[in-house]
Length: 531
Image 1 (cartoon, rainbow, N blue to C red):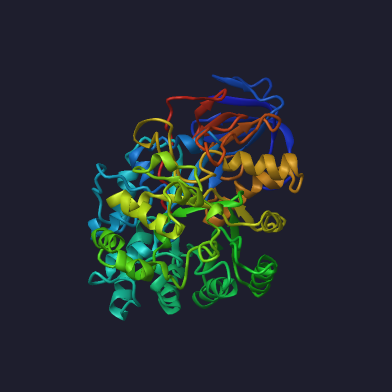
Image 2: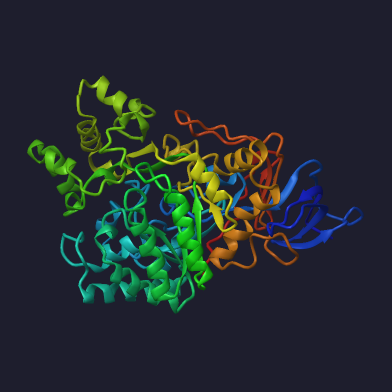
């Protein structure tokens, strides 16, 4: 007797092997049998004829560390077939936090009114696991968070002392012991941007002892792209760690050959024994926090000091004179290619370009407009996000042609109700899986269905070191997504992004139906996965 049989579907198992028509029998939270189960008894049977049956999709790069505390049901992810996501990316995690007040400003999606009731990484994972979770969650520990926890004084945008680095090592070790899936850096963001390469290497040598993954948002992806990617490869080589280069696509301002050259650098490293892979967002528009426009010195002293500096008009020229801008679109004056994506205090401007907002306000310098928007947001300035038309579609296609290229969302979990109901994060929040499969497999035919599924299932699980998910085989956890390629469609747009995709028929998380016939059930069977 099976609890559930998914019958007559086209099984794409996540390995890249050819699809086949088979039945899947589920008992408890496991895949119990794959084969002809037409005469087998089951408490429930789903006819998946004409539909694809795949492992649940895995998102290895999200920033849902805090949004899952606000609402663990992960509606924006489970509605598009995601059954596992990994938080703690780009150097930002919710723990360890011995200085919780200092950390709040560095947590993507932090919301006042939801207490930080943890201190250690173990405590954070415990609190997260106590939420009703719509998806399984694994967590990296972030380098920026370690810096905030370990460094003395208000100025953490400086090289760490050796004692401070040793404290980071101790915190990293404790977090890995508690189950962190790996370690991440965000070297374009404060405070990670002030770290020396030797500091990152020293921490990665600690990571090496646990054979966990190092994922990095590199220091530069435009005019100095080879320095940013080269540093990541050098750190991985010297520390002997497995490397995942996050959202690798070069940005506006990079030379035309940057993507091809970067792939050559990675290939050279792989041919000499390096364990290197990478991922992309399936979109040419990429998000980040608007506060990333500020130079590192502006962050010293926390939110109160930042707001004081923004309010000081005499400091504005120095604030705008950022030698390492997050986007080369800014010094190029391409404000028409940047849109305001999320703002509490200027919600009526969301969806407009910065150029349009400046024009409405009668401001000749859109850079001033950006600083005003941050100032007007007050203590919530870190939750203001914007998105830029930063990436080349040709570069995305070149990456997808590489078998080691994964696909990610780079977003946070949202829900169209409650405390997250009016939030937006990125163009990919509600539709990254459907967009990837629809655009690159169905429409453009650049990738087979089997390989497309592998990129967001088996490959992702392999990179994370998880061996009982990501592939449909007997004995594995029953994380399963059933969808229809003919009706699969990303319904989100830049101006109106918060819409569930079409075509996702059923989603199982740990053997329980979270989506049944396209509708959300009451099941929240996700769990925290500790390494």
